[in-house]
Image (cartoon, rainbow, N blue to C red; front, top):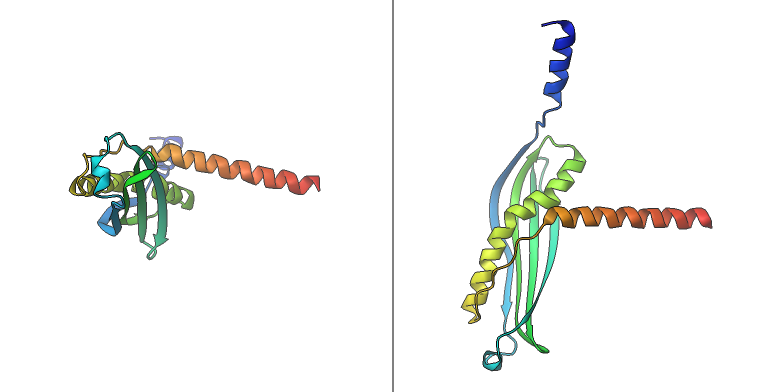
Length: 168
């Protein structure tokens, strides 16, 4: 191998990601189920409007461990009556080492919630069924698209602020 070949091989090996990412633990951090209009709601024709709200929180535990919490709130209504309200927060402890800060932000906003979502989905389905309602299967969520949209909005807001500062 020539010296040029050695240099190229060396640079190629340094381009490989060296980070470590491992899910350490998954747990229920918070849970709530309410049926404020029971038993009357069970007499209604079952054609609910279901709304879902998501939240994602990240907390650094130490240099190697990060807690990511995925919050999901489901509200099912028939007309103006709430059939049920489910609030679940599933958390995970993740070992995240040796990644650049921008990549860590992306991992905690996309990969971690993607891993937690199936646990939350199963828990919500079980709660709704045990509450006496038909099974609720949540559709998959594209956390990558949500993250990209949040970054886009933040960039637009930043440019609007900068534009308003320069015009004054």
